[in-house]
View (cartoon, rainbow, N blue to C red):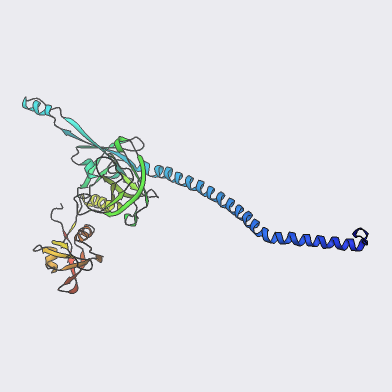
Length: 375
């Protein structure tokens, strides 16, 4: 009997076996291939979703950063002022006129800087070098109004001056806490460089506690790479909230090189408050000279090199050779540390000083005196 002559039931059985074999083969192929395909499909879907999320996030971030810049400009801009200092100077022609018995015409010397309103009743802080030796000070506000300013007081040691104008309800800036400033934090400088009103630039805090910028033992600075140019002096350096983190004061070289300095806001605020209260700034005085520990000596501290007779240090019993470890709880890492701490200590305050004498630790109390040349 040929295969063509098989009964119908046998043909159906053969067909089922063929279908089952084919289905098994397809299933086997599916088991081998599908996981890989499914993985690729799922990965492609996930990658597309992630890409969409990143694109959306990037767009939102860019919009957010752009919004931040414009918001900061609107927040701090109205509080920044243009300060013009004027004084009469005598020229060679004036000297010749004087020799002839003629009246001296004189000339007006102007210096231009910036300032920031810190009280709504017209109190402005700026740099001392902007208004030093001035005979007349003009202040221009963001709304176009101009005022003659009174010099309330100045502190050459910190290069700060306080002005007052006869105006009320002014948009004052808020202070930030400069002790919280961190390296890498974004900051913005606002001022009037080259007479360009309320120019805003941005950068980061490059360093904190920078010393030796100027020959001034009473000061530490914030360093920034925000663009600072002539005319920025006295303007604010603000944080991401638009609060004043510092007062811009100096740059390295004659032009901008990415290294600028600002007086920390906590220093500026303290000096401003003292000048408003008394017209000047008092600094603490102990009457002792310090030197660094001998090379190789372990631990922090500074050695007392000399003690002035009848000084607060002498009256407290400080002796030459003592090692000063702490002043009012703060660690003394070098002689300059004590000088800086004294600038923050109220005159007349009784302060604990931890020292080592002949290898023995002890704590003495020193009453902070008033630095003799402060008036």
